[in-house]
Image (cartoon, rainbow, N blue to C red):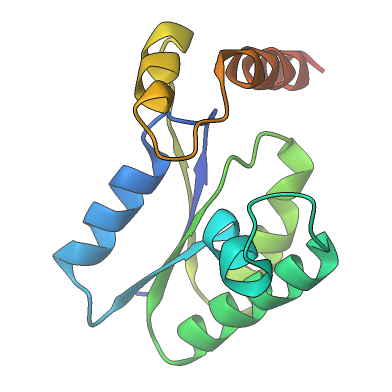
Length: 139
């Protein structure tokens, strides 16, 4: 059965690494869709772009892959609970198994990993996003 997997976690928590490895295990039947890479591909920048266009391309890519029988991992933070609803609805619409894959690492580990990236977001952003996630889980 095809799957629609949604990653969820702060920056540098291992989402993209895991998603790339998951696709590499069965590249003929698995696809990875990543918003950051779509932003860069479409607008040659990582932020400050038209998010509506990015969202449209992201969803179109997922639909095309699922329609062709492939499983998809949507590789993004998905920290807000409502960010999952469109993907759950899409999985239902296309009879795909819906899976949320959580990534939880200590801030210190995420900050260390982030510092070794080509495009780091910085420790402040990681801490702010952790706080946002914690706040949203309580509400």
